[in-house]
Image 1 (cartoon, protein in one colour):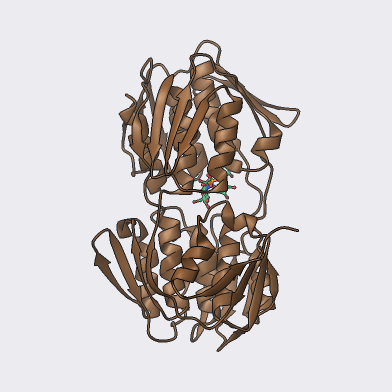
Image 2 (cartoon, rainbow, N blue to C red):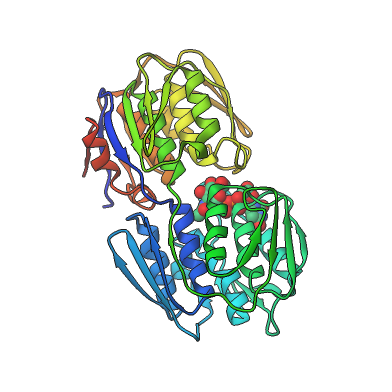
Length: 417
Ligand code: UD1
């Protein structure tokens, strides 16, 4: 039987937490190390299952990966294999990030299609069209994306239909070694994209416009290995900020950059929180019931979809009614049914959730459907009367290092069973 979290509600969280490097960045840095033969070192690496899965994938492609605490050394050989099998890709969608680097460096890539998941269908059309614009052939064969560019890639002007994080990354990591200049218009602007671009530039790439909707990449013939620190995880920092507000607690979040959370922190302030900067992070205090706040998820710098479950949990016990609109992933309201088992009053209509704040949730067994939903349910358990069991804790382990231990250190009654 898989592990679960047992949560007894009623504690106000109080104390300090330290946030490490971002899951959504480090996996892309690891995949992009393939672009340069030699030893690349990544620091501020979080201790999560997905890093192990990406290490396995890189090993399968011919690399040697050495993990030492929060440092990862990846030795990339001159000759790489080019196939990422389904048994690994199915465990972690970010495996698709080896596509761009492999096509650029090896001239061919076969990466299993990751398929949909619990937050809805996640197509790859923009990744594939992007690679085709750079001159690769890309087809779907027997459940694999097969991309080939035996004579190399050529720069192109690419306009994305939507500022997709993954498509921007795959195009950027292919275009760095293309002949000529590539532009990506309507590019994603997430801090993870900026981190990846900085990493590539430190390998010798020529990328400008990072953090803006227009990224320009001048191709270079080769890249060299580098050493780079992963950007702090803004989603984990934001999760702790919501945890402070939901439990009417006081949490100082260190190792984080509040500038990456401008809109979420503004929303929490509107809900009644007092947020102050401290050296190396920020502090969130809440001494009353939250006021319900309307929220719409959007690509960065909009409100992150990965914090949407925490926003719904806060509104579920806030004073007043609210609407949370999901604009990024259509299937992301699945966990609302689980929250309903704890007594939340939420009605979902398409991509809108109408929430009537209740005075108190009541503990019950629930199931984590993905990382962020699992974390949202644990936070809900902290303010539910009695015992909440969150099943399928492995989802949480995929992205949230030491979550139970950190909660315990803040005074929560949480155990893994
Ligand atoms: C990444 C993050 C995820 C986060 C998301 C949005 C990782 C490992 N995951 O996911 O945690 O929630 O960004 O911030 O970094 N789309 C298409 N066609 C494509 C590509 C995307 O239709 O070719 C759609 C998706 O289905 C989705 C939307 O675009 O509806 C955004 O997806 P995208 O930004 O690509 O998210 P991911 O990179 O998959």
